[in-house]
Image (cartoon, rainbow, N blue to C red):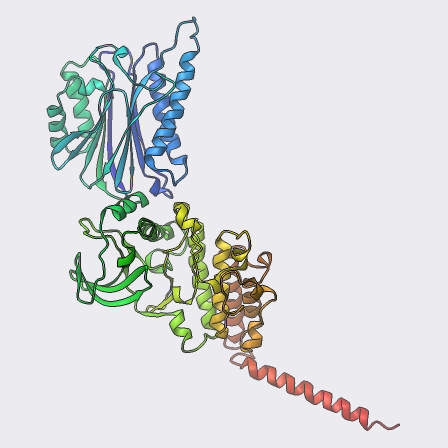
Length: 581
């Protein structure tokens, strides 16, 4: 789901000699939709062109730099810091004398609003205003920083007025159908709040509403520049991490639900897993009849704020990964390699995650019956490497790649499960300090003192261990206990020694992936995927129809070669023994 906004901007000079209002809206780049939209309106409050310069530079610098701040910054923090820097620049400018030695007075009001996910953040200084029309009710979101005087000296706060900037901040929830409005005092200074609300209610279209407001202000006798910026919320993006974390703090956990229990339109049909921290249930959506998976906190951990934050992070990652394939080769949806997560429904009564349900088996369940053959292992490795490539491109480390978290669906697609301990740039400090993962699949660098942090290479090592186990039924270094570095003193046995039917190229690939020395392993998921693709292509060439060795059993070929070598050696020995002296 994409954020859809209809915007309208009208700015009229009115009876002033020049228009010193300035306003604008900036959309995010197509590949950075999570950064949201930002809009701002400034009203220069000094003459001689200084007011226009202050208003124009303040709005343009904010719109230009807002999407360049670190992605993990809160929207309110980004607004505060960017406007603080602009205020410092204006204050320094005003301390320098003008061309004729006169004092400079480059001052401006400014009201800015950032729209991210399903929330807005507001920053305000001066006497421009922000309004919200929702369900027919018009709410003023800002308070004027102005004394009851008609000249600009009545402002108590403005950009460039003091070295220290004090902004008013606000935030709130967004809904489809909301109409946001920013106005300069040339509009609300002569139109009553009721008249502004009536125009917002009755005028269809953002641009038409902005035009109607400025025209009404001038018709009412406004002596100032009149500017109106209208933002209509047509559709909302999936909730951001901030939205989900807020839900995690506000909503209760469902508790211990049994089979048959109802939860927000879902009826529990089975308990799938319970590890004492989180529970996974199968449920049926009553409205559609489709099966889903519900993940929630265990009753004993329901009040743990860190666990709530990690579950919110997992939902956010799932939503983010659903968008990622749209910007990369490989398609959307079924080809993403992850289980689709659904955004929390409006009106949800509890905090939990909803995933698509896929029939099939995990690799762990498959290996309980028999190891995979070379072709099956190649298909597994290619699918998971492709998914890890997508994950790492998003700046995320899974941290728990293992057979229990790899699922082969009934549709024939491998999927990577459980992003519960995954790390991203937005992970909390507590999540980063958590030594997560299953010891036997964790690379040896993480057990050293001091331990190396998990990274993309950690996931690739874990995939290598998984492939080794899938082919041989054994772990390359055996069962590892935390900090048991003695297991890593020598390289493991080769895959082909334990399973001679494994082709030599695949054997070498897996052994490189699980090498003790990190520098000997694959550096990126793309490099590993390329090596797997080459193995698959070579295997297809060998077994292709028309190949003279096509369909031959590699074990039989080795046996025949060994037998021929033994026969030749026996003939040589006989010749040496019975050679005439």
